[in-house]
Picture 1: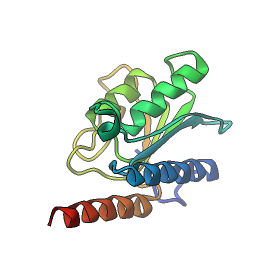
Picture 2: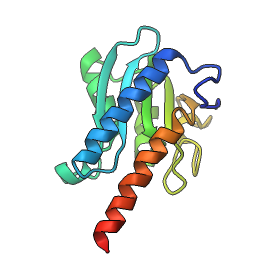
Picture 3: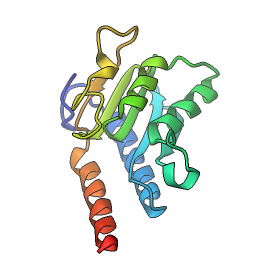
Picture 4: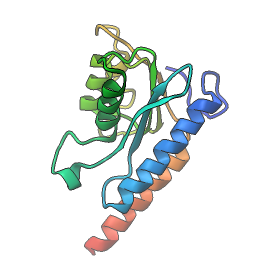
Length: 166
């Protein structure tokens, strides 16, 4: 795992651009009452966006409607293959166990994420599924890319949700 500071080695201008797009998608999720998580799958070398998504669990009444899931499925459809070895996934929140498992199964080459998830994070915080040497595929994981922007959206969303409950 490498550091996610925007100036850190391995974080390119393309990566930052894709994370900014993921943040835009997170804003869209939030505007629909969903937890603000956005994700983009893109070709690591060329930058072509292959799939993108945002959380839709409430809208779709689907526990699997996570941003990463939607983006990965879209990317597989776009290239006509289930293998995403030459792709990167930029996501605003550390993937959960379900999404980390899909990352491994889809052979995603790199995962860049913003905010750590101390309650469900499966790339570094609680588990390291995406890079576990015991599995048949390991993704490069870059944590903390535009972390403050990602965290701020999550804090604002949950603060507003708590205020509604008062």
